[in-house]
Image 1 (tube, rainbow, N blue to C red):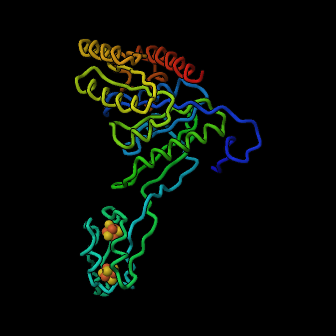
Image 2: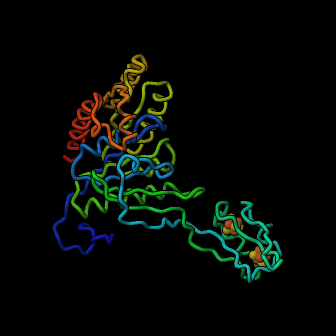
Image 3: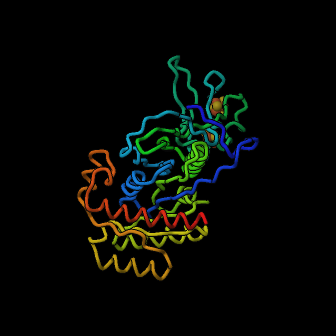
Length: 316
Ligand code: SF4
Ligand code: SF4
């Protein structure tokens, strides 16, 4: 797919279009049902671009059946490569590599040369500095791929990090930026982001500059703990946070504790979703729970209305 010029790009002569809002759905940890909630919101929200920022374990595509229209490499940092023809097998590079990324191998000719393990290589360049034969080249490191796909609920920007590939924070930023650019190109009003689990660098990359974060939690001790960790991170960046308690009826006492904590911290609880076996059936069918139907679908509709009203207030 050839990207059209962004309406907001420098030199664009047309009227300035409104900046799309960014809603990021997070969970302090995996397994809270975050992606099912995102897929349901994707069914309900109109005129949006979807972004799967869970680049280490992307699974939104499993529910959206995307058709790829653009694939691009994700290049980040450098990695060393040894040119066998120039290598004299002196071993200096291996002795100086702090990351144990260099080993020796024997060519078919019987000659020994040194090789770089691209997964272990950190791209520090030390081997290139010590090699007096000029046998080491530092090249751009391809760490994964990012994609734009069409889905039945609108365009999806997503990515895949190579095994052992690092810089998932950078890839998350790239996915978000591409989704934002695409939303501006097609005049979409919303970027709906499926964020990564946890509170690490990829999460920070997924929330900075967002208009609203929806934290999906579950009524367990670890759910409450992880919610607070994620909340501290999000509010530390000055981003409004709303909370959805998933499977709320599985532990009413813990749900009450989470409501109390949210009230203390002024986090609106915008949705409480019942445990519903139809969610799993929907996943098996590759559908969102709203498409599949079930008692919890109506609760998610109510959740979306409330989130929409919060986003509208952000716009004011
Ligand atoms: S320092 Fe250069 S010549 Fe020596 S083993 Fe490494 S790559 Fe080969
Ligand atoms: S660039 Fe650094 S980490 Fe990579 S092989 Fe060379 S010395 Fe090792």
